[in-house]
Image 1 (cartoon, helix red, strand yellow):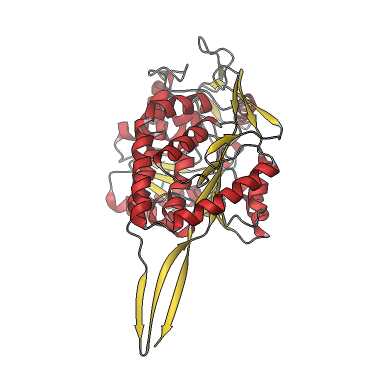
Image 2 (cartoon, helix red, strand yellow):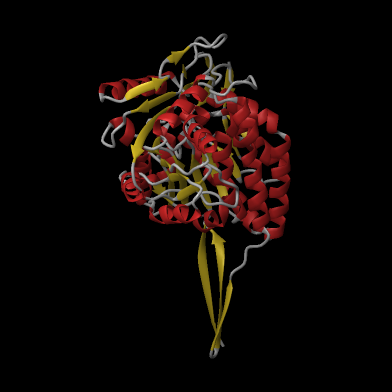
Length: 476
């Protein structure tokens, strides 16, 4: 069994804390012992981060850029290794991880590495005085990651922090500890100062220690709404900057004039990618009643053909859920949907693929006859469960789509450009996709409104939350 340790001050270090067990979601068997980072080791990490940050922030933007671009190339050349770890960590399909989820980590370092060399402020002139502004680093920033995209989250959070001249401490989910350590080694080899990027492991108590530590200036969380509220409260005593990327219950609105085949595939991708374990997934699919029956039939046929099984195999399309506890939660929602009167068209049953009989697999589920007040329509399930709802008119569907405490993503399928703009303008969501879904290039912001959080990952907007503005006024 593997032993996973914290990566602190440039090397793996032992902890005297408790040991957590990492379960392989594909087999259901324990595969690693994860050393929970203790208080003394965390303090050592903070001290190392302070020293590294001073060294790192003294470099020019061009020098930081050079190192980060090298890190991007090394991350890209480690694609297969990181993909193997991510699939083992999460249980997601190899085809997803290697084509999109893992490469976006290298893309983030390439993008923010390029920005590091271009950061500038403003210049001002008055009668008898001049002034200038500059964006300066916060100091030590910390990221608390979810388990569904460990490589992406590690890089999306750390790359803008490092580009701005900060040090970064990552606490990955205790359920997905592998990729964070591999990334730490790659960044160290790329030339980052020891202590600049560090990894601590553990449960919520380690996250709380990061939030409450007075020497950490910024927390970025990817997680659920309940966790986000706790992180915000724990960070309040030291008035930290906080970015929260939380849950969602996004709508996908399919108008009758949409490209039918594209709309069907988009609906499936927006629900069943990574076995539905995606916060921005469009799990409320609103379909124009004029095409409803035909649309559901097409989705059922395509869903029936999806390959469920060993995620390491290239032909697999649906991998495992993260844990047995989470599997039971998703299955409970299937029961709730039935009891509420929704019609289960297909799926929603535990699966036992050949060679993976002990794993946490479920067949993707499609519900019809759904109502807006059903729990499967209102609550985030975080599994491959689609709720299909019909609608008649544009204003009606906009009102229903916005009738949620969440606001992370939304999708519109239509061939009418005017309608696309009109509807997008009225949807309450941080990210809106038209005739596509869940596409997030590194220069594109990602984040939510309402209880889906605040702040943005990726793009130049992320740099703002990892920096502060200093204004210097010079009197002649």
